[in-house]
Length: 527
Image 1 (tube, rainbow, N blue to C red):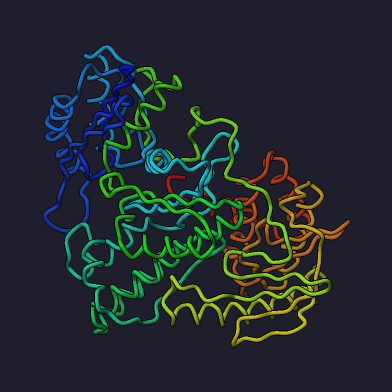
Image 2 (image 1 turned 90 degrees about the vertical axis):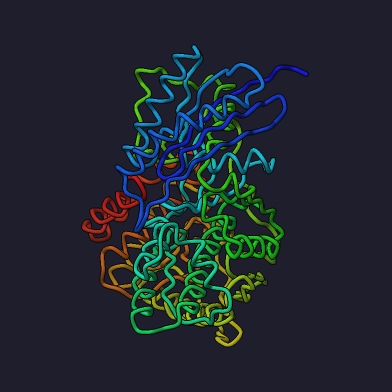
């Protein structure tokens, strides 16, 4: 057997002081972790950093004692995370690399969460859902980087849940406590916010606090929190599968340890014949094993960092990482073919002159939530499709609506989805169309390249199911944000297309929406 490579990994982005040794020859990963546990409330950065300083020497010593031979490289979590914790770990990693006379590798913590699932699953190029304390992203690898297809627009999923549990007086971490108390709870209505493939948790957490203050049973609130929050994550993951055409989903992040979330994702994937993989819990929570495993991969690709260039990056986004160890692959797959197609929330049957769209029940969602979403979205789609048409925007004619069955019959329009014919002319059309409906107070809600049809010199907007009426530039800007994300995640040359899209929108619409778009973009995690 060849000696392989042994990499020491050190993790310390927030609460977990962790060290690991990964051996590529045996495929084994030894992990030693000493978690920081605040006495009350959430994580205190200075206390967490002090814990890192005290714990890192011990966990590193234990990991090195378990190494079956010399270490070839030291990998550390460079970011994102809490600055004081990252600096403590970075200093330790540099000292070890110098002492051992081996290369240093700076690992993006979020990419490590994605790559550990890919490493273990063997999937080709999956959609990746990260659900962790400070983050929530849906990503896919395309054009040399992990592209963010959707993300939280306010706070990470774990932190959102912790805000509620702190309100009721529970200690950190709150997720396991919510999971335990949800057992036996009854469903109550709480907000559910999905915008394309982006999502927001602030509204549901405020409503949950209000429900608690109003005397609702804690079991019912915890049950409903899980049902809504995890259904939102599952829905956006399915939307990403539909947009890209992928049939593989990988879960990462500490919140992924929740049984209900994994159950929802597995059920969704099974319903669309997609494969799902969730790593073992020890690789889902913050851990040095994933740092060591990705560090070994990066070492093999020659992706090391000089000591004087290894400063930590608290705001290190996953889409800022040049992925040097992967080439010639993309999450984008061939566009669906045939007369019957499965979208993210509906089955579409294409006849000669009409298209029948049926919103199928989602078994992963609570029946009350599912019935509400199917009903409301069917009604809004029929109304807004016709309203946009009255504004001069090409949309299919609505032939029939059955709200009880969640079914709409449309005129058949277009020869193909925009995704298969992405040109500057086409995206200019989309820019003009969105500006026109925004001037009429209409938000599309999900204007991806799969929700635009093309035919000759005409470009049609379809699928208004997430749309609504508004007079807020923020909502209009989210439409633009969703469309541009779908381009960046699937197109070969997204920059030119984005420029053409924004120029056409500005020519027809309100320039203040573009200003708000920049603000929306800056609101993503670690912008």
